[in-house]
Image (cartoon, rainbow, N blue to C red; front, side):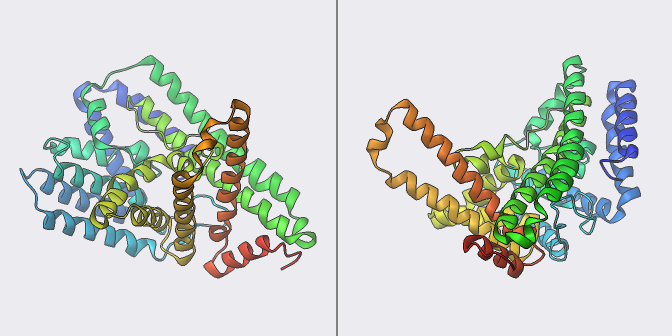
Length: 384
């Protein structure tokens, strides 16, 4: 069932109506059962994997103390399953949501399970009840498209759960905004109208065409994924839950570090918490932590060479920015207001171009084709 379908709109409407119509004690059991039924109908394998992971997480989290070996073993198995399915998966070239070659929602709930296990192992959360784990992992609005929300805030929302009229209004607004992003901005203006505008350039100015096609791909990717996130966030609000934001105007950020704090926030913050921290602490080399983090983000999207190159491309961008911050002349801080504003504008334009050009590595079907496109743009080839 596509999020863009009439069936999904009906499912959201019926879910919200029945959820608030039931007695408070039954609402969450209803939502757990509905989420399980949704997976059973649309992807039984995904339900089986989720239940197995939830069982492992519950067994570990219910222990008063878990060993590093136990936690590491569980994480290796979960990551292994994710890699196994991701290795044969390819995102479509237009940047839209991919077909269901990966079990539905696996990319998202696998990271939620790891988050739950690690938070309990580190003593940041109390021993969870089985119903709390089920509520968290079988939460329908974020089950298949994210965001990768955190257990702590979700548990607080569950404990304080109540009807708030303002949340209903904001939820409906976010859902409408999400659908507008996907259908009007992404599917029509960017994928159809803008593509028709730049298509003639492919035969007359190949380098410019590829540059503009990178912008088309990146803009569509943003409208698609941020639109799906808006719908999920709005659906959650209609059920009385506040899940984390996933995008914060990433293309308007003045440097690549700020971009990654604003792009797919639930995923990038997850990787900073668990990948960067672990690698930087073990190696005492923050640069290795940054490289490992960007590679983890890239491979989460797709296990392929084109995404490895994309991850390394952004990792080098992060390292270059950090070196610049460390060694830039101190007198630059003393310049006037207008020069600083001009510098921010220039930095924002450079960051936007760095990000957009990098999409050349992922918009093509293979790493070789992506490198060829990147090469054609950098040396201004007139034709392929």
